[in-house]
Length: 197
Image 1 (spheres, rainbow, N blue to C red):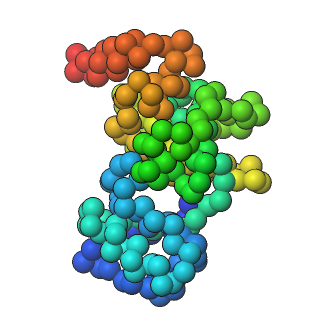
Image 2: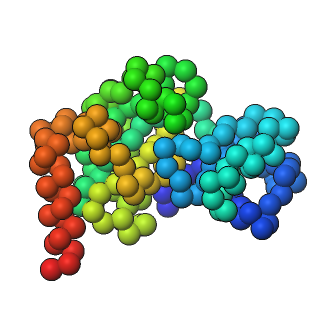
């Protein structure tokens, strides 16, 4: 019941180089299934770009996700022990939130807490919690989401090992509710140890 973009998965041994033959509408997004940092992700706008997008994604792993492209504002919601943190909005200055925009200083504006109506924030947080619960992600994660102009929310993916530098998204979200970086790391360790008691 979690809202996600329409899509398919593709294994390398079952590769098909035509979006049209697969019944996919363009634009679409081609990405490795289990990668991180948006490595190997391509927004495909023409049939000619589809094959090269597959080539790029298959360099990184043998299982891909190909899904409809959804235009909207980008957000991420941290979840610790099934409880959502404040939402962060991610606004790249150019393009989408790819590897370059994630790690180049000044390439992306990050706002936490995100400026959203209360009901929209609550829905995003609820979907993030439900996504983690449904997938069995127990300790901590970050759920990336899109919000369209019409107010529709799409959950894109669960980051099961989100960045944990002092300036990463999850620590920023924790700081918004008064949890320091040291407290956050200690909390993650405590939750993890509790699972093995």
